[in-house]
Length: 229
Ligand SMILES: O=C(O)[C@H](O)[C@@H](O)[C@H](O)[C@H](O)COP(=O)(O)O
Image 1 (cartoon, rainbow, N blue to C red):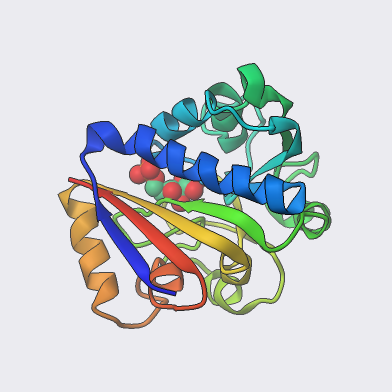
Image 2: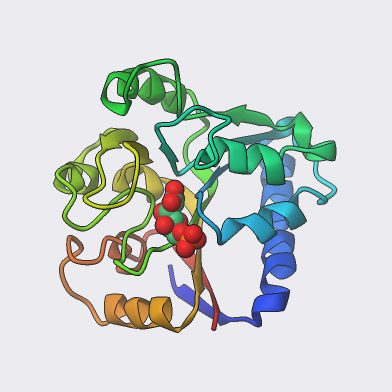
């Protein structure tokens, strides 16, 4: 599958990407009766999710979950669940079924078994995984230098608990295998610094150095890279 590199104007990207995502989800519902999308957290997805919330979809047949989660309360400012509930799951889109990663376990490691069970019940392959990327080349919570990175890159499990080397909070993350068990990957790259990391990732090298290579250096799944300077 080719990787499409779409250089887009930042101002237009959110609405355009939301339209593209809505089209894929609508096709999935028409073909299979259900659509499933996994969303990343952070700053980049916010405008896309706000635009997607207004899409005319059969939202009752859409499952929304997360690519990763910070192991904080769902009302914590850093919660990805909170981000999705505030931006996407409102109006008509509130009818979507949300599958969280955070559960009642005291920490991500204790919560992994229950999270894995919830993820195993999703309709794989997912239709869309929306990825972001940090300037260190991480994606999801697959961080360079994390003690669990090798596990995240090699496990057959769908999820794993991660303690980032620098970023705050324990995380729950989709594994590389889960990320690649999707029909479409969208990657948002914003700004010159991330564009430089993206170019370095494309040039090839160890996936452990730049885990975004999980998505970029493969040909099994179509990848749309939305790049805004
Ligand atoms: O929970 C998270 O933080 C995300 O899933 C993470 O992988 C994010 O996509 C990158 O850190 C980019 O974040 P920004 O979009 O805020 O730059």
